[in-house]
Image (cartoon, rainbow, N blue to C red):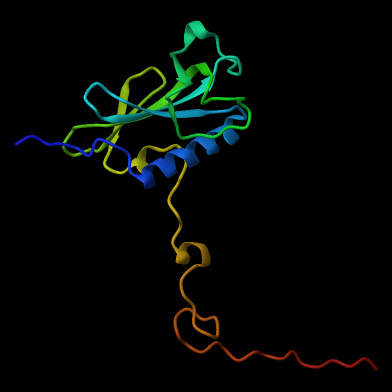
Length: 167
């Protein structure tokens, strides 16, 4: 029996991809388009790209792809682009993530040259920014007793300095 992966991104994964595009836009200071498409095998993949008229790179030295336009499935929203749902943009390909049919990995990351470079079962492992929500104790530290002591022992009694009077 062969392994058959779930061919589409979940709503949670799409939300993480959207947050990644927003974070990349802020980090790069340029609009980043994230678009989901489907491979010939019916597996979804997402590409991240920067429109070439905004990119500082020489188009001869980079991998390019057309992104946006009618029928595209964009997961990014950039106010720097006028109408990505209507207009097709020639973009510098930054990287992508594809759902894979490899049995021990749900995703493969594709680098800026189009090469498969990393595999993981959890999409968060392939994202460039930590997208995991921190646990409460990671934010506030270990749970403390009412008196502020972590080990449950009573704190030492405060000492009062000797009073001094000036004569």
